[in-house]
Amino acid sequence: MALCFRVAGRQGERVPDARRTDVVLLLVALVWGSSYLSAQTATTVLPVLVVLFARYALSALACVGLVAADRKSGPWTRDEIRIGLPLGVTQAAILVVETYGVAHTSAANAGLIISLTIVITPLLDRTGRGGGLPPAFYAAAGVCLLAVGLLMSGNGFHAPRLGDLLMLAAAVIRAAHVALVGRLTAGRAIRPLRLTTVQTLVGTGLFLIPASGELPTLVHVGVAGWAQLLYLALFCSVFAFLAQTWAVQRTSASRASLLLGTEPIWAAAAGIGLAGEHFTPLTGLGAILMLTGTYWGQAVERTHRSAPSGAPGPAPSGARGTARPAPTDPQIRTDPVEDPV
Image 1 (tube, rainbow, N blue to C red):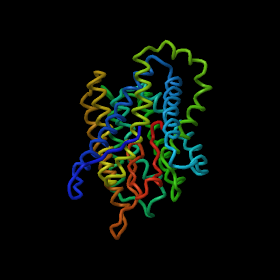
Image 2 (cartoon, rainbow, N blue to C red):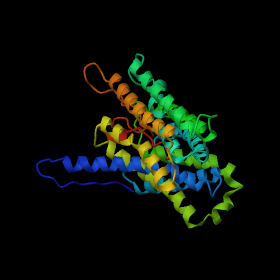
Image 3 (spheres, rainbow, N blue to C red):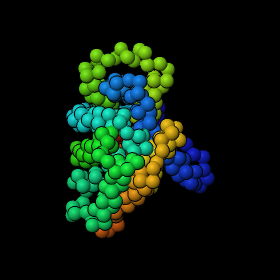
Image 4 (cartoon, rainbow, N blue to C red):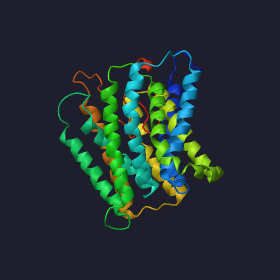
């Protein structure tokens, strides 16, 4: 699963490589955006806990295989295991709430509401520069909250739907998880694949017992069901993580943030194009406001965290918490993927 892109250019020409990097980041955003519809489809034929266990177990098998194949990176470090354990628990909490949420709302709404992580994370993250966020950031957050209200309204204003509320809770939990990642991994040499492997093993263990009573349903799930589970585990998790790690190390944090931030657009496109979901005028307006608010808040937060001298501070976390700037040494990159490896 290693990504090894080589570009044959003259005199150090990097334009083709830059375009390839952009394509990879857009592919990651597309795959992550489609994960909501895939999870929704999987939960129509399997219990949620079985879907989560299978997704984690398949991801863990792939990660363990990749670690075993990488014989040059040395043994596991204490930090990778010690930090991976609590992050595996918080990551599992995200997936529980998110998967139950997407089972009770539209894939488009799920992808749009979860993008609130972009503006919630800076409120919880204390690893960057001091000082409160500027008023413009809170204005952008207000736009996002208005968007959530419109998205929850559906065909008219009514009591919030369970699925939308769960996705809102998932966004808050994910933001807390991303902030915790920054705090625990700061200044430590953490290899992403190793940390991710620990998290997938933790998640597999956590869901094994709750799902054990319904595991026999996997036998009868059929080819289509297994295809959804494999897609969620290998593409939306393992592949997307390795691809975004490769790509973010080869572009600017701002550009990566912008491209990965298209995830809710792809989520809405998948829901409308593949599942026949429909946007009412209210939900359409909510979608526009959500995208506007998250991009605006992201830009304000990124500018605020820039050093006065012009040196970049930590970039804002993307919808999956992966758009932080890459260190010059890829072995010290600390951002784990958010879903679920």
